[in-house]
Length: 307
Image (tube, rainbow, N blue to C red; front, side):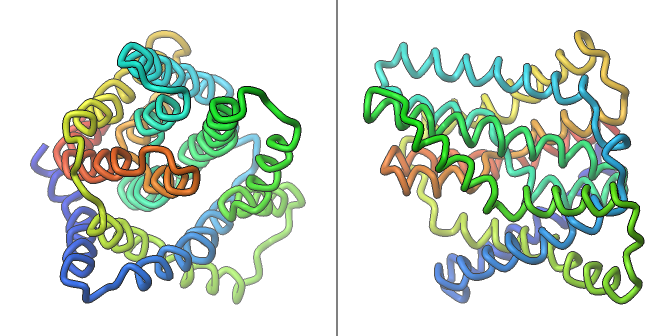
């Protein structure tokens, strides 16, 4: 456990450094937004494309792995939704809470951390988790919020969801990379070096951006944040573990990677969704802050176990 803590500590130290920069205003919210945009659209996309372009879809795709992650995630999603309904919350707020309970920071934290700790072979399973989160659950929350507001589902929402997926740089990078690999085109050395240099900025940039963005988050509604953090850091990895190891019998390494992804703290992009739709942004803010702080211990424990 101590050895794993020493391996994960530098990642959290980068988050802490970003948090300090944000709290002291050395890094303003505007600067953080631009750093996040750079990482999201350029550095992380370059990393994903470079890795996926060197992988074949047959090597990456694992139906049992996707099914295990999807079922485990849906189980916790339904638990969080049921608790929200029991508390008398409306459909939109319940959907936001359920999203916090299952969608972790697999892109900005999970991808760079697991790739460095476990090697390039971690990229395939993490990309499948990312794709599932983006395609299934990012679409689901938009649908539920729309139904909660308008009382019906319209075809225009499907168009909005489709455009959103097409414009998402992670989805674009994965698709282009897999297409490149499928066409069996070798990556020219200068291009590979360029992608390597740009993608190398993803890890420190993403972690620093996470910390800097946390500096603007508040800890209001701490009891709700604690519940959602418990769902995300405990129930979600537990459910994925049960489905991966005991129901779908996923191969050990892939199972380990999706369990680690499930143990990631609440994703920052949920806050952007909550702000955009005007649905409970403060409780999302608190859930992100609390879960990220607690994940220093919980995520380290999970990584020590899967190792």
